[in-house]
Every structure is written in C-alpha cells, then in structure tokens.
Amino acid sequence: MKRYLLIGCIYFIAIASVGAQNLVFKANAFLNMLETAQRAKALYPFDTTERYRFHYVPQD
Image (tube, rainbow, N blue to C red; front, side, top):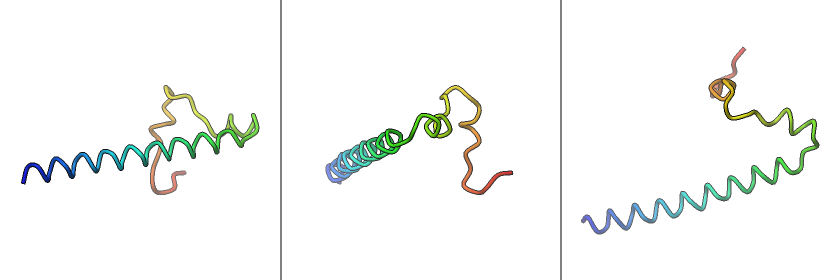
C-alpha cells in the first residue's frame, strides 16, 4: 500500500512540474509579445503591496 502511495506521489509531482514549466513558458511568451509601455502596465515589482490585492471577485 505504501509503495503505491509513493508511486502516486512521484507521478503527481512529475505532472505538476511539467505543468508549471508550461505555464512559465506561456507567461514569458506573452510578456515578450508586449511593447515596452504595455509590459510596464502588465508587470509589478515583487516587493510591492499590489501582489496582495489579488481576488477572484472584482474589487473596487
């Protein structure tokens, strides 16, 4: 039983890793398509408080 659980965990980690790499690739491709002004609007520095304002429902 533990063996199957271990195999399942390894499989899940491998699949999640591939999905994360794919997401990063697509995000970078999107950012590379933008012009300088558009890119400035799309990116925020990591150390700002803006990153804490993410919500699934509209704000303001």
